[in-house]
Amino acid sequence: MPLLLTRKDVQKVLTMKEAIAAVEEGLRQLALGNVAMPQRTAIRIERHHGLHLAMPAFVGGDGDLEALAVKVVTVYPENPKLRNLPTTIGTLLLNDPSSGALIAIMDAGFLTAMRTGAVSGVATKHLARPGARTVGVFGAGVMARTQLLAIAEVIPIDRVVVHDPVREAAEKFAADVSATSHWKVEVVGDPRACVENDIVCAASSSKEPIFDGTWIRPGTHINGIGSHSPDARELDTRTIQRSKVVVDHLPACLAEAGDLLIPIREGAFAEERIHASLGEIIAGRKAGRSSSEEITLFKSVGLAVQDAATAARVYELAKASGVGATIEI
Image (cartoon, helix red, strand yellow):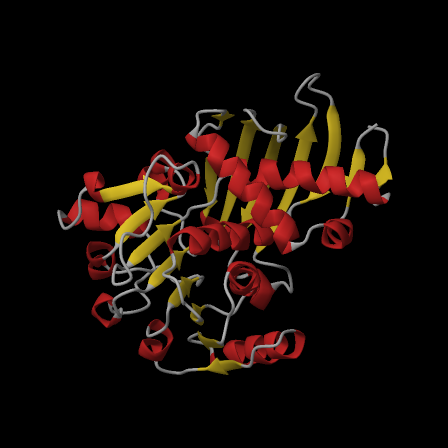
């Protein structure tokens, strides 16, 4: 009988440290060719300004990780304001890779937020310059919070600033994070003050560029995770041109990442200038940062391999700790 794991169950067992380890290994296996992952199916619900995604993946390979899963997730940006619901709602089905039997059904809202943070943590670990300590965050939602949690796992953070066009949202985010961490988060009204940090996290819901790429200082590392459709971007063309670009998965980004596709369509950037996938750097197949002055950019659209790898770890942790309930279906 499968294990049913609620959001609270997943929260009990999934730490950011565990999520980072699972995502890093999943991306390594992807680079090594040990992952089967078709492009996710997307249905746009225009009438309600929503997006429905189906994301299957199988992870195999040379390590202990083996996972077979499909996540169904919806993204409705107006939910918090209109319906008192999260922007992102998801459910994941986990199967036994050896038999195909369903072994778990789990809420994927918290899991999605954690693995999205985790992939930026992995990118920061491999791409940020030594000595990076300050973080600027664009966006004040759940994803922005997990970005900080993940970065704090891989570098010591000295200072955090947040910018959001809704000042009240930024102030609430700053108060909540400051109350539950050792950082004092500062709200900044000027987006340039958010850019001028060692690490910049773009975790907004904007469809237009959120800062001027000429503001970026040498040595900055940028994580771009907020946009994931061909006609939307958080990062302007100048940012892409100035950066060493690393992606979560090249085919996915060339299908969905407007941050890259729009400059390519403009003729201002070429696909050939994309340096590597993050998994290639993890696996040692390509180099990461080459100098302390280089600007590095990690662009992620979110991958099913991240969900499958994290869900497999959640399942093992839940079984070991007796969390969840078995059900008949």
